[in-house]
Image 1 (cartoon, one colour):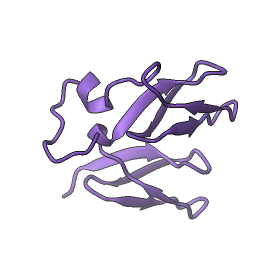
Image 2 (cartoon, one colour):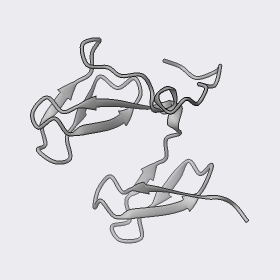
Image 3 (cartoon, one colour):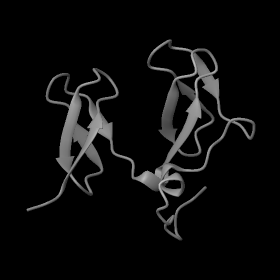
Image 4 (spheres, helix red, strand yellow):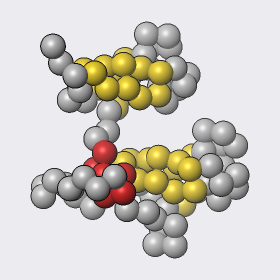
Length: 97
């Protein structure tokens, strides 16, 4: 039996469960197809407006806060290491940053 993973739907905020290794997870509530990112593909930044910690696809130029809807630009001044680095997991050698 496959290991299960979880994520929050980017549209309706429902908690989704899906088999680990899946690239997309369709929400059963709103039918949105969510792209699944692995830990080395996720960046973290604080919202410029409300200071909420935001996760975004690593390498994105900006991220929109789901709480206050403010758009935070991603740059050297606020970029954090990928989530996998913060968790102590090695970044795969073929990943792009």
